[in-house]
Image 1 (cartoon, helix red, strand yellow):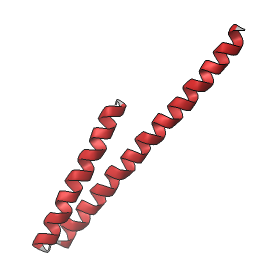
Image 2 (cartoon, rainbow, N blue to C red; image 1 turned 60 degrees about the vertical axis):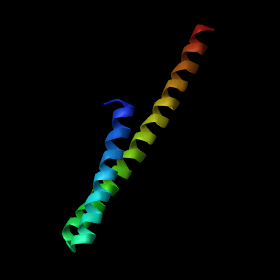
Image 3 (cartoon, helix red, strand yellow; image 1 turned 60 degrees about the horizontal axis):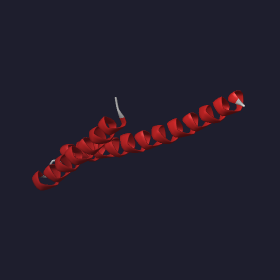
Length: 73
């Protein structure tokens, strides 16, 4: 899954979760509210994971470039 798709998926979960949370609050359905909070938190976690993956990929790519440059010298 591409970085853009991961970000989209995480934002979708956050938005859907927030909607469920509000629905639960309005209807007094605590289970639905909790489900929404959980989904929203999962979306936030996915977002943080995607950020971490991007950071790690950047560090690995940079290290590869340095190794290649040293071997070319």
